[in-house]
Length: 605
Image (cartoon, rainbow, N blue to C red; front, side):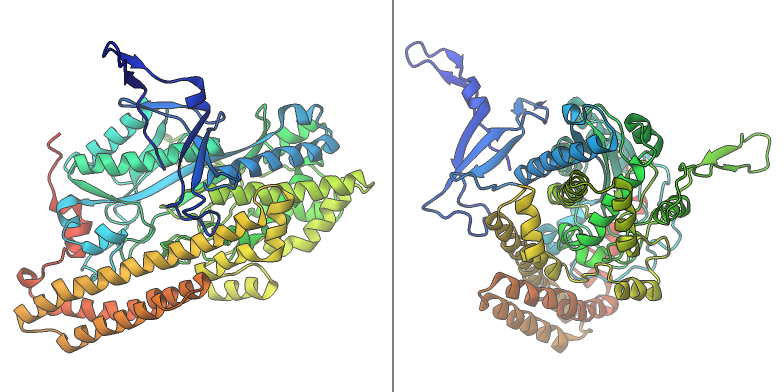
């Protein structure tokens, strides 16, 4: 959210323009907070909302406006935003992690504290804006609720990493996005084509999680605004088109000390602590956190668009395991079984056999794109995160669950237990969450499910896990969210899911009535009666949702409508599109939406 205030006023005596911005304006602001999603935390008769500056995130200038990152809380101090719980979770991570590191041998651990760092890979689609205006579903919801797959989609894999050609407006658009972001201190280091037609990606520098999240929200705004200037529409939703890849926002995550000693790099943390066992103890805590709280990790990625994205086309399944790679797994397994040895990953050298290319080395860990949380040598990559998300909740969960485990380890050490024995016992208990195989294989999925690894296929059910007693206690004990704050978020997320589906169903009805049926009638071919029944079915399902009071029950009905009913009904519309002549079909087709390279010219700018 953003609130804009003037920094000048007129002097009533002289009519001169004067600056009117004081330190108190910077520190605190007040606004009406009653109209935001609230989950019962406030009402119209208790509407106060208060802004306070977040001193950890840089102020930046864009155009004539100074933007001041802030938190947003109610009159009674309840978090009404995504940032306040994140900052609290980061504080818990720093406090509890410092306790553990002190016991592992790091002097002055509490002086510097810990910080969580992330790098966010932002994927998106860019489509012709004139065709976007011919799709009410894209305008209202960001995804197509109908549309026949064209003769060509991504079979050739020739869009991925292909040159960004000046023959379309995309190159100039992406350059301007980078330019505007750079002026605000946001270096988008990488730009490239992604796998699906008209799909692209930006990636920034790595940094502290709260700062990176603030900057990513700005990046998404800039993307949408600049795209319009170049005759394009930016789609940030996770699955705008059926049958091709969706978009993610891979959350590359690591922890370091305040003076930049990385916890997930064995030699660095072992050297800093003077303890060769520091790294495996830390890894044992993280692995246990993933195993115990995989339900919260799944909840954190339960954006409506991820319903269609997870489990195929390079997006990991909704089974929260972690990939460590052969070398790291073997090292931790030896540690678990009582062996004490240094982690020495194999360095593989590749020689392609020609004099013109110098032999080069590759890391010990391959890339497992079917894992939701793979280890990559110095960080974990939470690949399951959706492209449209504000990833504050994702990182709140990561910080909170690790803080909890660090706290448990530190408590046990202070009670007289040995850190190494705690770590070995923990790894034995939670080893099942480590999986290095193919996450798409049905037999592997069943094996993980049978082993007790968290699997929640439904985003609606995943959101429900917020109110589980285990998770309410976690957030309370780590001072991240009170019970009321946590329960309110569950209501907000369920309402958001239901509202998204209601808009999609409403757009579906309008498109059938105003476009598909008239096209079929004009052409004199197509399933007219079946299309009329589509409208009746959708209206009946929407009425059932509207007549239901409980937010969870409404969301469950919405999920059935979306993933079952609407998925079947779109087949009727797609069958109509298949037989109606192109000149009689009034909606933009996938062919017109997805192939800028063959359907557009360069940007006029």
